[in-house]
Amino acid sequence: MATKALNPFTDITPEVSQALDAGKPVVALESTIITHGMPYPDNSRMAADVEAIIAEEGAVPATIAIVDGRLKIGLTAAEREALAQVKGAMKLSRADLAFALSEGRTGGTTVAATMLAAHLAGIKVFATGGIGGVHKGAELSFDISADLEELGRTPVIVVSAGAKAILDIEKTLEVLETKGVPVIVHGSDVLPAFWSRQAIFNGAPVKAPLRLDSAEAIAKFQAARDAIGVVGGMLIANPIPAVSEIPAEIMGGHIREAISRATKNGVTGKAVTPYLLSEMLDITKGESLKANIALVENNARLAAKIAVALSAIK
Ligand code: PSU
Ligand code: MN
Image (spheres, rainbow, N blue to C red):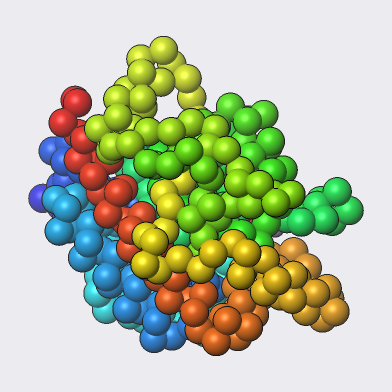
């Protein structure tokens, strides 16, 4: 089957296009994690691994990125490898996605931009590491990720390991609630915090807003939302596997150190999240990166199972 032209800027691979036309399960993957979230060659290996995991679970992976002004829904292995090595890629969100298209640029898509592009293509499930959210000190900096706004408006299920622990988790939950975004913890009563299985706030574990224990139950919940016409995304928080986690008590001090380095070096805006992730890698001597890769792989597996369960309902 020929590649479908969604619009003059978009290339959708035949494999993804055929799966969507046939109502088969497809899982979108973001690319900021490749261009800004991890160093080479770990990013390349992670990007290939998550695609393989999704395929193993019976779904078709669609990594989304902008390459030379083309919105790519699905990348070839060669395109994925080139993206993992490219220098000076943009970090693209809703605000500047179309800028990269009109200017012929290359960039990684954040959770917000990937949701937007996935919805455009008709993909309902998306796997990432951790979403962006309300930064610590946001009452002064106003730094709140566009990921939250997108979750409020775009109907895609986002499978994450929670909000990145460098964020203000409590404020992030408040904003999600305001925007009508369900936060479902997979298989736990406690919200996970990216590298850790349990988010801790004021010394106590943060309670899961909602809990579901299977991909089928998550798909059923989505079907109920669709049936009553509730628009917007939902956030699945999938705890990192116990063997790979770094407990929140250990990460807390490291996060404070990374944030103090950011403040000292005047890092602001879009640069904050990539800077903090790379400082964490330095502070933990690579342990944070290992955990990050493990949790993304874990999320890819659950996302594929949800996509399979969703297509079984229809
Ligand atoms: N999760 C990771 N690594 C990342 C990100 C998420 O494991 O690099 C990216 C996502 O693309 C997310 C973005 O959308 O960080 C959030 O950036 P900001 O806080 O600037 O909105
Ligand atoms: Mn920000």
